[in-house]
Image 1 (cartoon, rainbow over the protein chains, first blue to last red):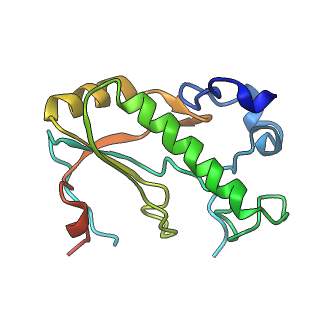
Image 2: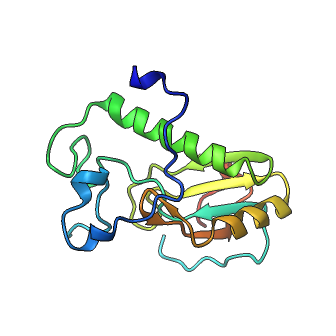
Length: 39
Length: 123
């Protein structure tokens, strides 16, 4: 049923979470932190 | 390429630097928690990104082409190139996108010299 919603929320104007720097917010947002993997 | 490419002061093409972050960008096929990702998940993730992007950009003018790099080289991973029909449309989009966020990350937008994507390799 949830798939029948007319439109997902766009990622535009999705500000970074305030807690992003304090905790591992990656799991919440599904986003990977910008750190470059060690070579 | 590590050359410093010049940025034109006006161009119909915009570059959105490193905007698309594929879910398995650290290790192909595996997410940040080390769990395998279904290729269909990656595909729909990408399609949703593309759709968001298209809907936003089309507000600012007619889009000639919209390219998302799936290149894992650091300097261009997830770069998005959007070519508008008119330079003014690109300038309008640049003004409107500068300083905004996409999915929690700042949008880095500049004019790009690329106008022909088949010829868009560094020489």
